[in-house]
Amino acid sequence: MQRELLEQLREITEEESRILNGEAEVDRDLYTSGSDFTIDSNKMLEEGKLIAIRTHTRFVHFPLHRHNYVEVLYVCEGTLTNVIDGKQVIVRKGELLFLNQFTHHEILAAGRNDIAINFMVLPEFFDVAYSMAGNNNVLADFLVNVLRRDNQQGEYLHFKVSEVLQIQNLLENIIYSLVTGRGNQNKINQTTMGLIFLYLMDSVQYVEMRLPNQYENMISMTTLDYIEQKYRTATLTELCDMLHLPMHVLSKMIKKTTGFNFKELLQRKRLSKAVELMCDTDLPISDIIAAVGYENNSYFHRVFKERYGVTPRAFRVANKKNDKVRL
Image (tube, rainbow, N blue to C red; front, side):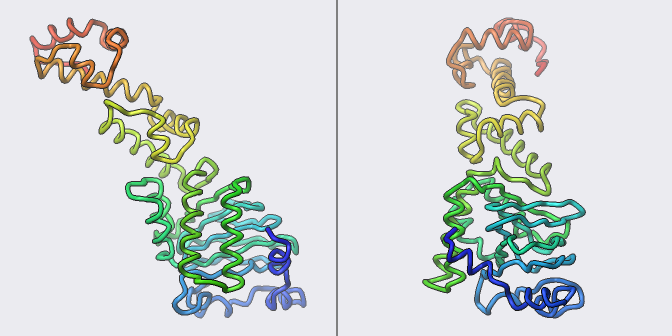
């Protein structure tokens, strides 16, 4: 980050000055008008604005609170420790923490050199980012739905992307734009966030989520649906591209949630479809092999016999007779 911008963010705010002069707590009146500690977007954002930023208040424990907007925390220097549902989530330099609406959390006291930015974002700000991610992007659907959800269960997305230079540059751009107030802010900032979102789609191997099982289940269901619909031509490479996941990450997740690797799932589907065609049609075996996606007849005969204990022809004869098929 540019030194001038970082030094501007490092400056002691009026609130921090009062804390350093003896105030023991944050001034809740700066954040909310209600009795509970819900930080109000009407207090934090100017009318008509979809996004604003402020530096995180240092030198004091920030007590348990929530927001009626999406909060994105970015650490420019040092670290910041959130406590979410009793779990410490340490956000380090260059990392992002997305908190959905109404998530309760508290923040341990930060030191002078712990510089963090709070992006205060209304959910509709992400509409441009969502449209830029494209239609039928299941990962974008999942992330946006998590952010939009009105949920108090401590949902968060922690992106450990300090080494992703493109994201760091884009974040500096949007921080500079919001700090200086220059340019057509809404359009530029929403487009910049859309670019950040696209890079985050390609960086999900670095994400930690509050609801990992939900995420993994979404991935496994998408995998099974993909195989069901495209078993003839399905490849792990295509699925990785569709989900924006590295092959080793996706392979590990599929194995964990289904008990099978991608090749085994695909083979089971193809063999199951082949059995269906053998018993329900009079297609030649060679045509069935091609119809389910195999190019090598010898390989098909080998894997079929390994699974069913007989050759495809013998299987067809036996099961045509009694109409019972063991899948």
